[in-house]
Picture 1 (cartoon, one colour):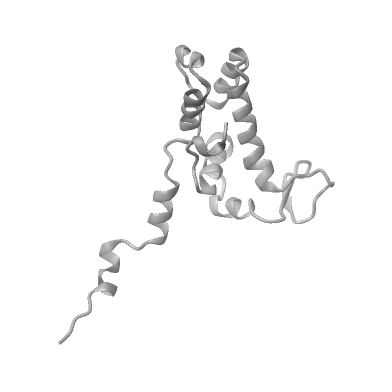
Picture 2 (cartoon, rainbow, N blue to C red; picture 1 turned 60 degrees about the vertical axis):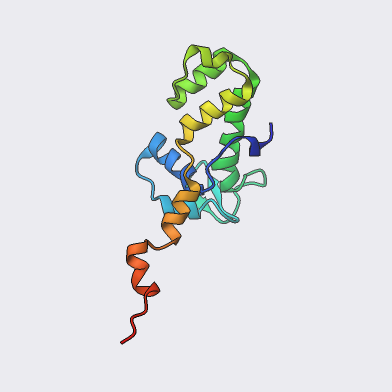
Length: 146
């Protein structure tokens, strides 16, 4: 199933917020988001970020914290093994009705991703962050002439 058939958040901060809510509650979202781009690696042993890979098989942080967990979540839903999926959903705090486990894969995946990530708001978040509010920007738009 292609990724474009299911809505995913378009802002990396959504992934960071999911980690923060589910695991620590103490993350600096901006700092962690910045570490997900480029040649930065996470050392599992020291639990620190570094620009040098600990060994050649170490994935970059984006792969480690975003792509691999997303791939695992997709794989679980697509595997159609209901018992394993129920255990995974319970561990992630995702509550599905029993009838939902019998749904076709696409609607089931959408339901799981909706609960895991919450409402897709990446575009709205970007607009709010980068476009000034009309009230604040009104002075820049209106030119008074004496």
